[in-house]
Length: 175
Length: 175
DNA sequence: TATTGTTATACTCTATAACTATA
DNA sequence: TATAGTTATAGAGTATAACAATA
Image (cartoon, rainbow over all chains, first blue to last red):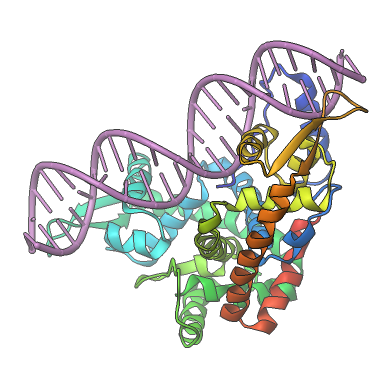
């Protein structure tokens, strides 16, 4: 996907860095179409949605960098919180993440003591997922940061447009 | 938003929007949220935009599979067509693709005789890009397929919502 | 026989550094 | 010294297949 937010300072290729820093000074994320014409791309909803997603995720990633959480990890924590006792398969279907990938995501969150896996008593093949006390505690700060991000977003597109977008895009999230 | 989005109220909104949306068209790709609650994810524009992007790209990729073109390749062809003589750096900035990655994309399109790289006479470091006759010919079919996809998309979200989305999302594509 | 979680592999895309040839 | 294109590598993320334990 589209991740970026490495304020790199370790490069030896100084020219490149200065250019990047210069860009960053002006506006924050904006992948912005520079110069050339987009042609019919500007009429493709997929293209605009993609650019929006990149823009939004860059801001989100930067915002949650201080708690070392990436979008997928955040979404996992939120859905487990909202559905305690959920199984891994159910979680993967809810978020549209592959079962195989979810295993690694959970490994990381479990190692950080944010999440617990228990063997289900009803079906010993499956795990019931839950947040630890530490996970719930961490989530307080995490949510506050996510709210900051969301407010910045609403401000960027305007309150009215923001609400309209939430409503219209929901058609894709619920099959 | 989010400032007017109480977490507790979110799941309520979530449930209402869900019911509302489910009445609509039969889903084709549908990453669909199965069973479990999304919690506050449903109030994150980034989450909805991401789901929309996945949905749309799945349909686009399937549609253009018969011409063996992926979204990034398509966007490169379209922008070169709209800006003959463009340099690789300008193209990469326009599309938000890394220069390094663009090299490989162009390698593939050049091998298929869709695109030509010429040394610029003004600046012998840079390449001027253009479509070949074969590339232009191929684009006729490619565009027709892309239009099919776009029409399907408009139908799915509804003509009015579709236009609104195009207009509102443009804020992210341009500075 | 089917499903859950898991491991492994391959491929796409992103991010970064460093090289070359020009400027 | 800086820039355009290139090469190389590491890391996310996605898509599959296969396996052990359990149903």
